Image 1: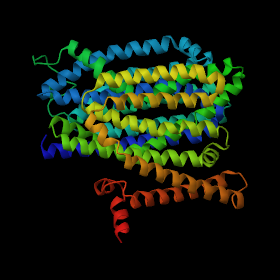
Image 2 (image 1 turned 135 degrees about the vertical axis):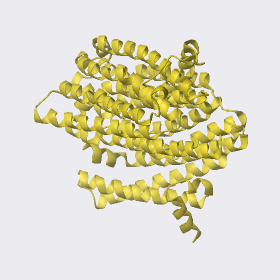
Image 3 (image 1 turned 30 degrees about the vertical axis):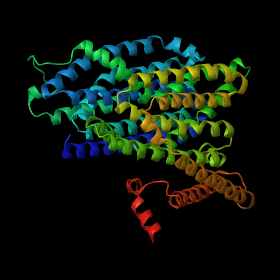
Image 4 (image 1 turned 90 degrees about the horizontal axis):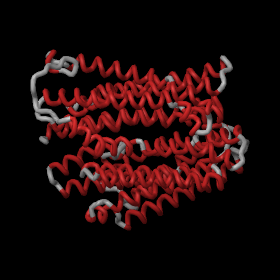
Length: 532
């Protein structure tokens, strides 16, 4: 890969990271006004079915397109790329029709498996999205494989914007027309296929716009014989690399899916009434947007290093690979620890500010530990993916999902929603342990320098204690009315104090290298002030 191509790849990675950041912020933020409008029970109804949508969009957005872009980039000619896309489209069409049929026609069976037969129309509403997966996946994969990231980025932001708009309209109509929560959920989940259709149209017109000749596009294919990857090879690679990448991209969503099938049922089995169980599940689900926001902070800056890892592996530059991998993990740990500590300490105020009360603070505090584990898993996954360790990744994922399923059955009936939070953290811990065990020895040694771990632990501890003492004192003496405005003030003060203490600690103990500081927004200005 020459310098120009490498620069193009990096620019594309930054563009996709920015689009993903915008989409994730939208995906996390809309849940707050949505929950405020429909209440805990309405939020439960939506979140029960959300993982089905999440898996579909992960496949169509970040899982298979990334894998397909790799296949496209391996092809020697444009003709081979297009013929490959054609075969992939056929395979995905068969797969998507089967998946749609299963979800649509077995929606009642799925709803009963979740313990709530009234969820059936909501599940059917989201199933239509899967018919759009072939066009979403193949067009995004083709554009990314030919280093044209703009169509994917635009379609991603538009898709998320339209989806959020439809969901908030559904919440508004819920109050205006006195719908029940299941009617609201059905309308809200229709956002999946509406937004997916809009994204498909954007990608479709991008294909038309980019074509140079009629016989050189996906839309106008001739039958000229070219050497193309066989269906057998495609199926083999999809069932190993493609599925591993897609499922791992949907890790947190898969854990949520297990919660959908086990948490509500476990609460009612333990003797809780149906309405109380729905309310408790709705409170537990508050943790998901908070985790998303926490992971945005911890991973937004490190994901741009993934192309560098792949480049270093392909060029057999071991020193560059080690340096980039180490930098990615260090930055991930740094920001995920900061986000986790901040959310745990400020949870009472954040919970009241966003959701109007302080119910479930203990449950949500445990749940926030998932930020650190999931962020590290993402970094290690990127490292192993660049070295094609697909079987290890798949094995770790399966072990973690089994752990979550078993732990939910054991813990929920005894400890309620706290048990589900513990099960999530334990399953992520197991996945992290297995993946880390499979890292190359030299890389493992580079990533586990005791001085770095000790410094980050000390800084986060000091930050947490300082924020807790200051906010606790201010709450007792000034902002003690217990309303949302007070919660906003306390949250803001806590964030300002926390960031100040954490940045001071990073600079004082020289946790990050100069190169890592310069890769961060405002990093250059922070270093200049430190020098002065």
